[in-house]
Length: 291
Image (tube, rainbow, N blue to C red; front, side):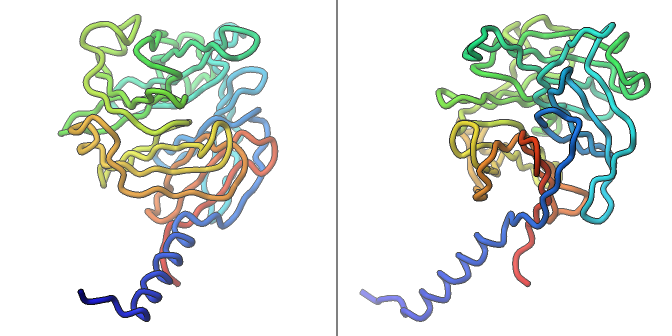
């Protein structure tokens, strides 16, 4: 049996280690205030919306200039007549021409062990104009098809757009695809015609990010409950075909806090991650290799 050249093995090991270290490197971390515990980031047509659970559910708008997010002095509140409707926003599914959905986790007991998941269909253009949900909350849908929590994000599968969502816990986690038009008219996600397909996935999913030009779904995760960062890149089509996540690659960092959201910028090798920490809650990431 022919053995491998030990020098060649060392060279390969060097490049693998270098790749893993470079891919997903955090280049800068800053503090962005007034969000409470930041719960996510949504990149829409050059605008970056960061949302969190302050005294009410809030969203603030930013623009990216070099490696800084610049506040545009526009704050949005998920309230109706001052009532806190989306206190704990857990995802924004936006796609032009389709209904917009915002997830919400509703605490059911003081201990925080029981939660109710709700997907809110809202008039996005109206919400951006008035900065409140008054007159813009179309429907609140109970996501009772979920196992634990909801975090909506648009994905494309075989030429059609669906709303994907995922569970947070460590038991029987799933990614589910819902029909957006049917969802916008439903009372519960368990109703007939809402769920299209699903597959099992790894635990502690905080949010989802869709890479449209590559057909890749990113699970924005923690390595353990509420701590340490993990990004899992999935082949969506293969995952749906097999019924379980088809992993392309996993990127982990040594950041010890709770990763909540992530998006790529307009540059394919640059990303922005947000955590729930009160300080150092926004990190810029480099996905280029080499140099």
